[in-house]
Amino acid sequence: MEFRFGDIEDMPIKSGIIDVVISNCVINLIQRKEKVFSEIFRILKPGGFFSISDVVLGSNLPSKLIKCVDLYAGCVAGAILKQEYIKIIHNAGFDVEVKREKEVLIPEDVLQKYLTKEEIIDYMTKCKIYSITIVGKKREKIKDENKTNNPPKQNGGCCGPKTCC
Image (cartoon, rainbow, N blue to C red; front, side):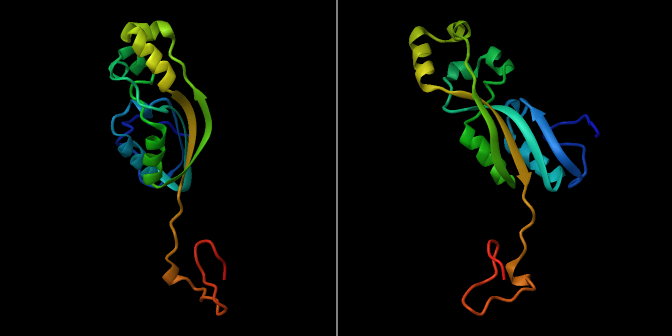
């Protein structure tokens, strides 16, 4: 095991040498999440994986809460929609699986600092925040079907990614 100090958006690590990346409630605070997952993909070996706990949204937060320092420090204000978060990871080249999901509740006394009574009611009925644990496995390189040594079956079948000759 080795720990390194560096910037999560520009890791001081050679490409393709890391087996596992772990993170706990950090990526949601980073603006350029695409860059973070691109870096994780770059440093992982083929078949390597990450396990991340983070905060995501089920729906958009009211703008007053997005600007809230308390919620930024609590890893909520930097969060994005869950489906967007997963799409970013998938687009970076990972197979993605959410292993755990738990709703996060913001105490009403915190909400009262930033929202009116009506806005609190609206927030409580429409907004959801989740803590998730997500695992992403770096996809292996897909073989070029035209370069396979296995010829197509003569009985109408073919060799392909999900079939066997």
